[in-house]
Structures are given as structure tokens and as C-alpha cells.
Length: 405
Image 1 (spheres, rainbow, N blue to C red):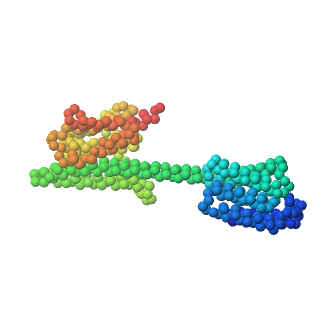
Image 2: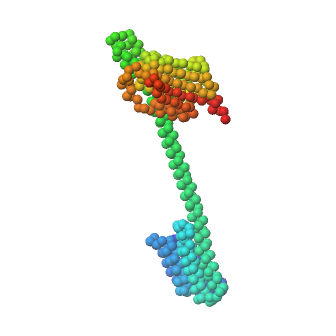
Image 3: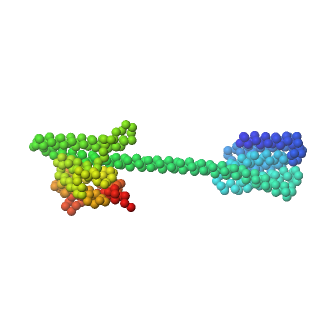
């Protein structure tokens, strides 16, 4: 506002000095003097104060500074009336920038009318009002307002563009943060699922062996020693699996060595069955369509092989908890070149009371199996069998079948 006031006073002073030095160069220049300069100085000062008045809305400020123009022209400002439009230009710009279009149109029309009236009053006091001078007054009033309005529209548009770009960047950042949080949540779920499967499998075996150990301490000391070694073996195996899982989760850290960590495959299923047998459980393994020692070479992706391994692991752990003492049968059928079928079937528990282990399950084992199956495009089927047992069947597509159109 101060800059506009300084500019208006400078223009006013320049017009008055020019009229004094070369009256012929300024319309009605002989009439301009210190009186006109005083009127103009008061006018531009009043306009500056109006623009500085914080209580006024931009629309009211525009109307007030525009009213000063015809008043100053009527007070004898003469050819220097044009210097009063500096504040009007500023006020028009502020209205257009701060108010959404086309809300400012009515007040802009009022301002243009007042400027035209001011130029008309100047003409009446000077050479007299004629159709030509009236037209010039209207053109000057409209052009002055339009010029400032165009500048304001351009600036407002650029501001809206910058704001929209900033909003879009914030939205993108928010979306990215949400995706990151979702990825972290999925990673945590996957980690919890892996921990659940590893711990459930080994701890179920340990629980079965310790239950037998309790009976063997007094009646079969040698058998109890064997059971203790098996518990130690299961505990060591569980710690090893947990270390492998942690190593895989930390493979992006500097210095992490994951070369010795190999994910479980279909070829690891015989080891699961052997471990369950060592724990004193009756588990059988049948392999069709390939050799047992070549299960890991089947045309199945590594993620699908891990899903199949975890499914067998969780199924055996569930059988130990919910059907202790029941016979289990693990089957791998690779006859079909398009799929590998992995099944785990357990019979009905010998005792109607499943024992304390049955109450330890949280009911998330099958949920984890189903999530892994969906992730690898496999089909999981679970349910009770007619003989009172339970069947888990996982149909894993081979890599060649997934590549076919």
C-alpha cells in the first residue's frame, strides 16, 4: 500500500510540475497548481488509508477508493485525476485475487462506473462534456478496471494451480504413506504367520514328547533319556528355524549373511515326517509321480514350495494338538504335469478327550494356510473326514501351467 501511495504522489507531482513548466502539453494545464496538488495529495492519502483499513472487506475498499476519484475531480484536480487510479488498480487486483470468480463482477462494474463519472466530471470542468469525451470517460473507466482484473485473474489462477499441485503432492504423499503402512502391516502379518507355524510345529512335538517323558521317568529310564534328547533336538531345530526366519527378514541390512539360509521346499517334507516320527507320532509319507529325494526338483516355484511345506507343517501341528495319538498320512502326488497335490490326513483321536493340547490352538492355522494358498494361486480344501479325522488338501499349480495362456 505504501508503494502505491508513493507512486501516486510522484505522478501527481510530475503532472503539476509539467503543467507549470509546459502548460500547453497538459490539458487545462494553466489551471493546475498547488491547489490541485493539495487536492490530489489528500485524495491519494485517503485512498491509501482506506486500503490499509483492515476492517473493510476488499469490495468495500474498492468502492470507497473509487468514490474518491469523482470527488477529487469535482474539487478541481483536473488533468491530474488520472493519478487517483493507482489505488483503484490495487483495490481491483485485491478483490479479484481474494474472491472467487465471478463474485467480484458487480463491484467491478460499480468501480468502472465511478471512474467513468470521475473522468466525466473532469471533462465538464475542463473542455466541457461532449459525446466524444463521454465515450472516452467510459472507455477509460472500463479499461482501467479490466487491466487490473486481468492481472488479478492471472495471479489467482497461478495461485490455484500451485495450491492444487501442493494438494496433489500431499495426497500422493498420504497415499504413499498409506501404502507403506499397508505393506508394513502385511509384512508383520507374514512374520507372525511364519513364527506361528514354526513355533506351533516344534512346540507341539515337544509337548507330545514331554507328556510321554512324564510317564517314562519311573518305568523306562532309558526311553526317558531318548525322549530328552528328542526334546533337545526339537528345541534346537526350532531355534534354527527362527534364526533362519530372522536372517531372511534382515537380509537388507548391511553385513547380513543369508547365503546359508535356504527356504524350505517340497524336498523338506520328508524331514518333517521324520521329525514327527522321532517325537513318537505315527506319521506315514507317500509320494507318487516322482522319487522322494526329487521332491524339491518339481516344477513348482519357490514361494509355492514354501507354502506347501508350511501347510504340511501346520497340519501336523494341528493333528498333534487336536487329535493326539491319531495316525497321520502325508501324501504328495505329482502325476499331473499341471499341478502337485499335497494332502495331510489324520484319523480320529484314540481318546474322546483330546487332552490339554487341544485348548492351546488359536484357530489361525487354517487362516494362514488359506492366505498362502491365495498368494500362490493354489487351492486349499480342509474339512472333517467320515471316519472322524481331518483332511487338508493343497493343489499347487506348476510353473509351466501358469505360463500357459
